[in-house]
Image (cartoon, rainbow, N blue to C red; front, side, top):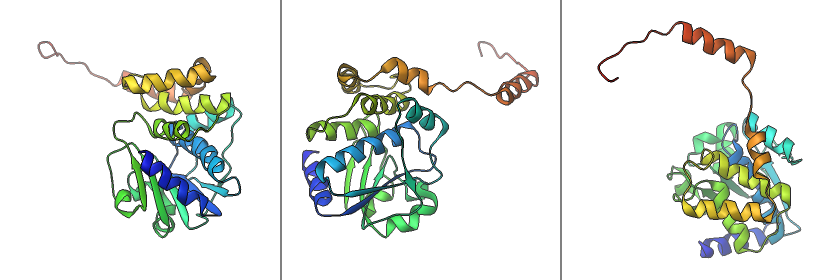
Amino acid sequence: MLEKILKLKNVIKDVDEVTLTTHKNADPDAAASIIALNKLIKHINPKITVHISLPEGLSGVSKKLLNAFNLTIEAESDIVGNVVIVVDTSSSYQLGLLRNKVLEKKIILIDHHTAGDLVNKAYLSIIDRNASSTTEIVYRMIKALGVELNANELSIVLSGIVYDTRHFILAKPETLIIAADLMLKGANYKKVLNSMFIPPTISEKIAKIKAALRMQAYRLKDI
């Protein structure tokens, strides 16, 4: 992985502009990856201009998390520059209306999913299927290059990991070590959990009650 990180570093050093993008309706893993990667890129090349383009914007829980930790993602509608970094996305079709524009660029792919068509089109791919989340991969890159994150940035990185592991249900020991490292450095785990909770609306509650009223129960032996 270190070899690929150094290759990414060389690419970033040689360009004036780069665009970060991800899948439609970006979840906390995608949003956290973009926040952390933005910091990483500017550490490598302080003069670079980083553009962020989000097909269909952020999910509701991502918006709530960013607001809770006073972080913003100023998204644009286009892909700018010759290099585009795609995070948390295995298939080009997940990019929605941005798909064709992304495929015209030099693609750097960072992901933890099973490889899709994007890996074949990428100039550089940093993929780890054993990672709990794309955020975990980006954080390992950040540590390797000695980038410092503030408390809010650490918390949003933790939220990406918490979200994709379903509150650590799917976490491996390595993931728990990373989460502990984030918290020791200042990430607020309790605030992350509180910020990820979105209470159901009255319409959702009514819909569930109506569905329950229409249910019929049957028993077949022990089922």
